[in-house]
Image (tube, rainbow over all chains, first blue to last red; front, top):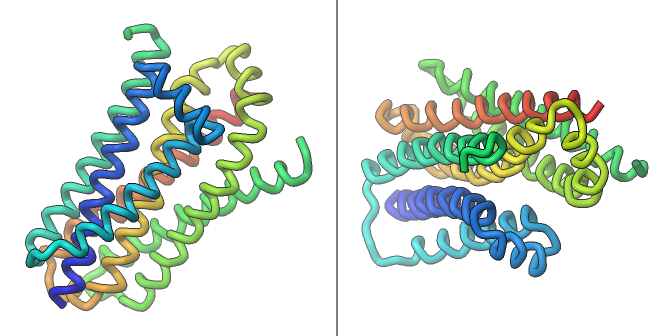
Length: 107
Length: 151
């Protein structure tokens, strides 16, 4: 049971970081064209680049956190699941807001 | 548009729709007092598979065709915001779904028995599965808007 909690917690926390990473990369790529260009050059398309980096980060971080020598309680998993929900909602709103502001030339 | 790209686009829409239906069904099942864990495990696995396949087929179409052909039509048309707001948001938020679906799949498979016993653990899952269904429906509607703007 303890191992299961640890594995789930690792994947939940990795998903939180990965979603934050996708949001950050999306914002940076719009604000700093050099980052979008780097993604295009390296991965042939900026969206493909974000996707590949996100999958790599998610898997690497999940493995890394799973092997950390720490005990995970059910309460922590519960809180982190809520955190994942909140980060996903906030991330969606930030991305939508970014493109609304950019399209209607507020930024 | 080549036949391969046409099938990719159809696959993207159909698989995405199936993913949304499956997670919506999982949400409704999870809201019940007595739910079938076997059913939830099956739905979460199917939903994760549908989203991954939809992302791959849609991604191929997007990279190979949309940017070069469809995007310029939308940007030169009456509704350029359909690309610059709706499509841009859709393509990035869609990236969230496989990670959220993978987490839900793992929780159902590894902690499934505890969800029935512990309501406090079930609550965040109801939120998360509901969010996947709602985001999926929003992405689906975004796709319809983009298709309309390209006509």
